[in-house]
Image (cartoon, rainbow, N blue to C red; front, side, top):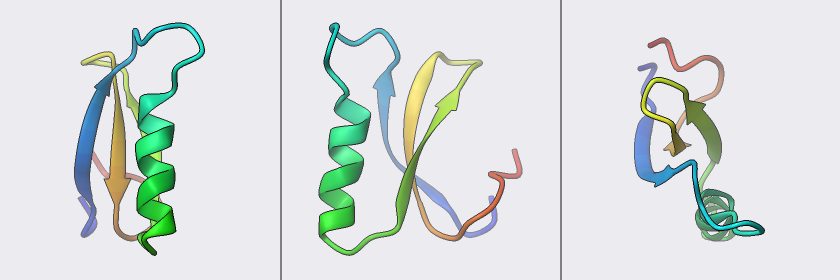
Length: 58
């Protein structure tokens, strides 16, 4: 996985107007971490991923 790790998983079907994965990622960014939110289509979840850049390589 190119030195990247999943910090947290969030179901894609959250309440309307709620973005828990983005909120979690923003809090990690404020702590100085490099993170991004990606969609795992097969499990229908949003993943907050930390580490290098580029593709997940999955």
